[in-house]
Amino acid sequence: MLHKGIKVVKKVVKWFFVFLIFLLFFLAQVINLGTSWAKTNYNYSSFDEILYTLGTSVTTASEGVLEEFFQSNVFPPLKITLCILVVFLIIYILYRIMFKNSTILLNLQLFRKKFSIKINLIVLTLCTFSIFSLFTLGNSISYAMDELYINEYLDANTKTSSFFEEEYVDPKDVSLKWPKKKRNLIYIFLESMESTYADTEHGGAFDVNYIPELTDLAEDNTNFSSTEDVGGATMLNGSSWTMGGIVAETAGIPIKTVFGPNSEQSYENGLVNGAWSLGDILKEEGYRQSIMVGSDLEFGGRKTYFTEHGNFDIYDYYTAIDDDVIDDDYYVFWGLEDNKLFDWAKDELVKLSEEEEPFNFMMLTVDTHAPDGYTDDSCENKYDDKYLNSIACSSEQVAEFIEWIQDQDFYDNTTIVLTGDHISMNNYSFDDIPKDYERGVYNVYINSLVDTDNNKNREFSTFDYYPTTLASLGVKIKGNRLGLGTNLFSNKKTLSEKYGSSHVNEELKKKSSYYDSCINFNQCK
Image 1 (tube, helix red, strand yellow):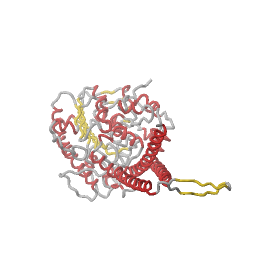
Image 2 (cartoon, rainbow, N blue to C red; image 1 turned 90 degrees about the vertical axis):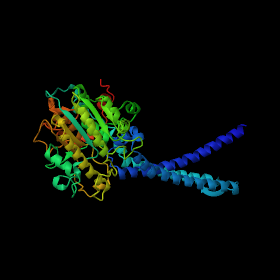
Image 3 (cartoon, rainbow, N blue to C red; image 1 turned 30 degrees about the vertical axis):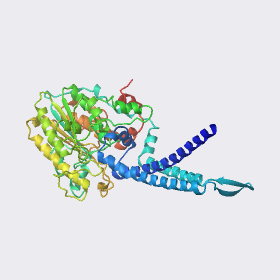
Image 4 (cartoon, rainbow, N blue to C red; image 1 turned 180 degrees about the horizontal axis):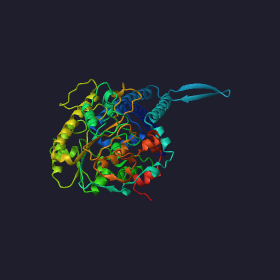
């Protein structure tokens, strides 16, 4: 019995070893293809972004994105691995039948002594394949660590910075003076919208102006720029994806992911728990607040953020179904396309305008999401580039929506803010722009209660949109600083102007005990 038990254990160990070898080979292919796919389709700029997305967003991502990932990076390696496994099993069966007692004898001369070594052919094959699999896996991991900024992330987290302690201005401690009559705010996050899409004549990077309507809005209202023309903000570390961009623009801080013993706690309880955001401020001032998106608001932790920081009314793909805006089985791109989203928003804005309290209505568009965007039947596909067609159509749709708002009775007491959430992650549409062109996150402040002649030739980041938005409502901010942001309507230098964007960026990459304890977990001592 003992002998039989040992033989069973040996067989189990042997086949587990076989399974492990093929699993390593499969993983090596997935890592290699997945890294190439990510670099080709999405312009990632930090591992923080990737780590955050993997930790919070995988199950709620667009069905098309998930399907494309599996089709491109999982199924092909799985087929290859299974084919090799089948060939191996056939060889193994034939070997067992025909050459059960055969061995290969190798005579080696070592230290002048002859050794006869019996090597089983199957074992030799497995050993060779295992070495190859480990080598392939090692190369794939090395490739991923370089291309996905993992080495840079690990290196930065070995260094500490006191930048937050020195420069972060806690909004809870800042005196805010409000106008007698509080203004409504309509804040639209435009997915991946950059000033880059304009033509060179207007400050963009292309020969064709793909956003003529948004360019006109920027020129006719207040646009903050790093040049004399239409321009935008620098995107610093921790703000280069949708949730990072939203937090940057509404709380003046980056998202710094927790990698270590507290990471599970961080993702379960949400991030930036200790932040005091635009939503928190407006809630205290009696604003009724709404957030409307055409996708699942759970994606990227957005629902948690807007619920915990301002108690927003939620309008997303699933509430659109509940409210009979779309049918139960309707699903386009990420859920609900922008054309229908804007029509839905008009209905909700009319309802909000009939209430006594001021409102903060926030929206996030989606049709211009990388890699290829989406164009509905109303869009004119004028260009060969699919993604730039979605950009051009979005510019038209946004402008039409702004015109509608300006025709409403509530517009006189309403400020509209249009900003990109981050620069685009699309890769192929920017191949021909000048290498030294500095891409900027689009912005325009419409019907602001304050104005400035200091809006051009500025060095600033999306953190600065936070106090600037409050200032556009007529709020006087003592010191003109909130979070890491500076009120751009003032003449106060931004942190980017004070230190340079590169220096600020390097400091933000480093580990900050203040951020981890005070901002992330709200456990400031």
